[in-house]
Image 1 (spheres, helix red, strand yellow):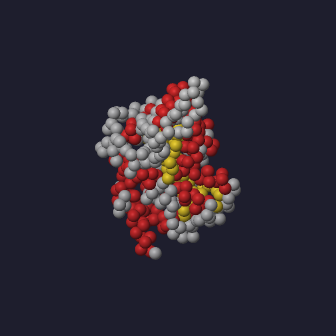
Image 2 (cartoon, helix red, strand yellow; image 1 turned 45 degrees about the horizontal axis):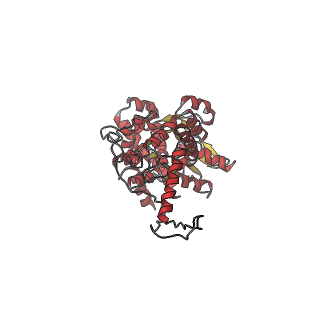
Image 3 (cartoon, one colour; image 1 turned 135 degrees about the horizontal axis):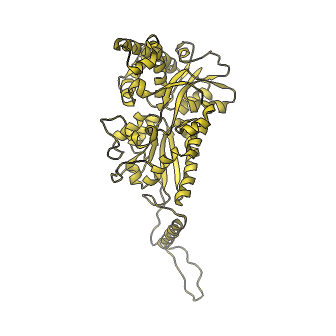
Length: 417
């Protein structure tokens, strides 16, 4: 089970979505009913009917095992997630609701909101009441932690994303990577990252300012460029080992910036959607661009929907994308859903859920399940954000923060227009 932090800390927050039920005037009389055998006429007020209905609901809940939430009624676990998980969590929610009912006898609901990961994280900090978040990257979950929505100890400024220690594999029940989606026959002859710098290749990617997937795209390109610039000195392996002089690393980082900027200058011209699914629609449905940088699972899904209209190019080197999950303590406590929220996340690591994850084209945490579905995932060399970029806090500040490397690319593009 999850070693969650202290459950006593609760933060009250207003409901993001509210259902309104019409109020009845307490003593307003309804039409009289027929007289009884003794000639008595029974007049029922709306208050009487409300009391009766509440009694029926209470008895029904007792019989079927309902447990009221903070505002009464059927309890619901609300998951705020990023764009490409729509199909995964639609299927998982159905699986989990059935699992919970079999385990506890309680009938519950499970609902997921999808959007660009960064935008979703900000929505949670601004009042969207998520029992759990399943976002694209750790830095987005860090925003939720910094907003004070986690229990004491879940956000430790002296450690990088301390909340990640609450679940196995840094709270990542699945991982993915970044690939390139091209059109049938690969008309531009795209074989890897290098081809994306060509002026004749129109690149499609969502906006790294709002999309977690886009940040993974950007870092995958940067990592390749860094490996290429350091090839004579042993590449990323030597970089990770710390055997390359700093002046050579500085020069290689400059080269990586210039390489990544070329790729994204080819993307800026097409415009950028805020989330991965919007970018997928641009490329697949609207015919925008020649090459689409995509989550592996999103590329496989898009290819299957398109028939033979698309092909996947798997780079020899890419990044290991690690989308994390965690409970939002204050919301789950206030909504009285902590027990459901904890199990919702724990169950993601179960054999049943891990197989569902693999069938939805994410690489499962379970080695046993991964071996079973290994043929569905092409082989490639993967590096991690910790190995090459020093973790998400460092990467976020240096690359995507105010006046970071990506802002410099945006400024360069604006100056060239």
